[in-house]
Image (tube, rainbow, N blue to C red; front, top):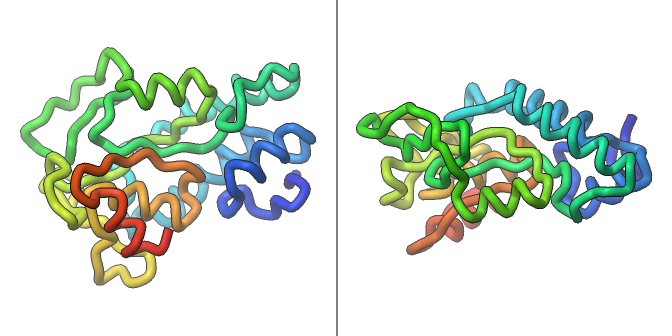
Length: 194
């Protein structure tokens, strides 16, 4: 099914997805699966994700679907397909920061932003790429290689939140969490047009 006015969940806004969930013309599970399919289609060329956790994403989407059906949704972000920049801790996932010098052991706790997203019921799809330790305005690293600009794969999407910007503009995630200390969201937003 598709939500009223939502022909393609991967091109819908947060508000459009929430409205479709509320009127039951689209489910959080359908939206999550559409985004996971989009990742499978586009990410091999673009390299926006360092980690995709389909099982956890679909479990979170099923939980969200139950809340929406019971009228107990947690707000506008409940069930929204979301990516997390690989500088933020997510319990159960490693934080590699684009570096071979980091551990691949899963984190034991969430960073503050991830904790708030979890409380809001967001469907976390996976972690997006960043240059090593998030230190430059490009998006390549020894761990993940190059992340490509979706408008011209020969160019950079900018950094350090390059993977998040690529995921957002291509419909691989509706919402993307980045971080910015010196243009790390602003440069990828400008380079990718999001």
